View 1 (cartoon, rainbow, N blue to C red):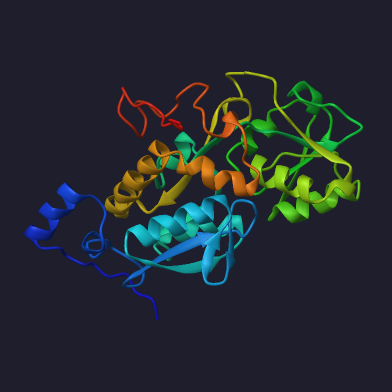
View 2 (cartoon, rainbow, N blue to C red):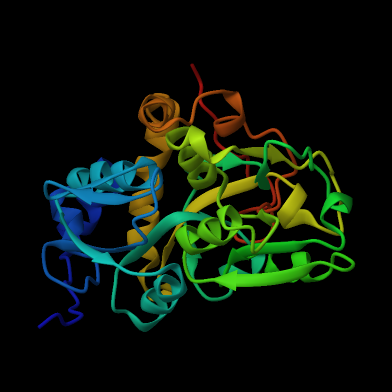
Length: 291
C-alpha cells in the first residue's frame, strides 16, 4: 500500500522554501513513504514516545508531532521494537525514527541525524540498597541492557561484567525486579520515568560519576536525536530548522516538564561536543535553552 514517491518542487517553490522556512509547500518536495504523511517509527517506551487519540505523545513523540504539524504532514505511526527502528529507516519503510536514541559517530555512517532534542547522562538502575555510580561498581556483576544500544561494546569491555541483552526495557526491568540480573543500563528518561511511576519497586537510578574517555558513550554527554534515511537529508534539514526554533523559545523545556525531564541537565550542553567535525562543521555549537 505504501510506496516511496518523489515530489518535485518547481523553481518558484524551491526559492520560496529557502526564504520562508518549512511550510506545506516544502513538504511536497520530500521523498515520503506515503503522500502527505510522516511515517514515524517509535518504540512506545514512555516518557519518550507513545500513541494516544491519534497523536504521538511522550517527550520525543510530542516534539515530532509538533514538527509534523508545522510541516503540514499527518503522522502515520509505526510502532515497533527498538531493534527494528534503525533498520526500517535504512530500508525506507519509514521516514524517521525516534525513541530516546543517542547520537553516535557510528550511527552517522548509516543514517542522517537531527539536532539534539535533549541531553542526558547515562547511569545505573539498581536497588535502593546499593549505591553504584561508577564503571568499577559494575565489574563482576550481571547487567541488562537493550539490544542495539550504542554503548553495548563499552559494557562488554568492563572486566567481569556478564551482559544480558533484551528486546525491550520492560523485559530488562522485569528480570531486575525478579533478581535474575543486578542492574539495568537503559535510556535515562525511560528508566527515571518508570521508577517514578512505581515507587514500590524499591529501585533508583544513579548517573555515572566517571568521565572516562575510554567509555565516552557511557560516561560522556549524551544527545538524543531523530534518525533519517541518508537519501532524505532535505527532510532532516527542515526538521532541524524547527528543532532550533524550539530550542530558541525554550519549547523543549516546556514539553519536557510534562514528562519528568525537569532540570538544567536535560537542556544544557555541559560536556564535550563530539559532533563538531563529524556530522556538523568544525565550528558547530550545540543548542541550549536560552531562557
